Length: 373
Image (tube, rainbow, N blue to C red):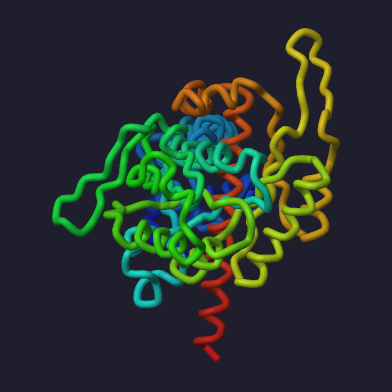
């Protein structure tokens, strides 16, 4: 990740004081201060008001108000400053494999994120959709691809069961639009469960067509809802798309955890970073008394995360409202973006975005060192 071009229109003395204070604020997701993370883009002083331009490499719109309050408190300790004007924007660094090495069909997409599980029934599709919407609510341009060729669920979960793709040139399909996302699914093309009868190579070919023949707009992230398991579709995606990272979804049950380990191993073998674990149905919170129960066991996701040295991105409750919202085509985070469950999804989204940004920076540094040598 390259350093953002800076525009400092303050005296050298004030600049040093401001940067010293900004270097004391540690971003909770980048785990770096704003200066070291190259987030400080511009500084200018008008009267006693300091205008600060910050550029974030991951989506975090919800944190802007609190950041404004904190920086105002910190910077107004300087005698020259009585107020600040904070302007924040998002600039997601593209995957280093973009350009000549990338799949030309995905040239408008900065990052492909695979959401996978070792087995079905763990809430993988629900996680993929709510993650995509969370990234969008946090400021990013996001699409979702339903790669579950045998059992596509995106059409129902996004309320798009009747959608049929159109084409402007007879070659490229236009994706659907819902809840601020663009979406593509084999379920938009084949009706009445026709895809369920396909053999592995046919299903892999269908995924290749969905990737290559969809007119994707410019996107920061394309979230891919993978089918359960470790078969042809997973390998095809690894070969046909420059996947930036994978999110593994599991539940605390031993059988689900065992299959999650297989998913992690698959992505490790094809050199796709595992960004972390999402544990669904982690606990049940009694609405009457507030008691927290663990009907499917506890700490399974964290134990896997520790074993494979990847983060536990979040633990979501066993909540009937989550499932009902997906069945209605109105995902819970889109319907009620300010609930506790939505906050968990937004936190997961910020962690995923920050992890990708940091990975790009590390890769860029490695490439620079190699070039120098």
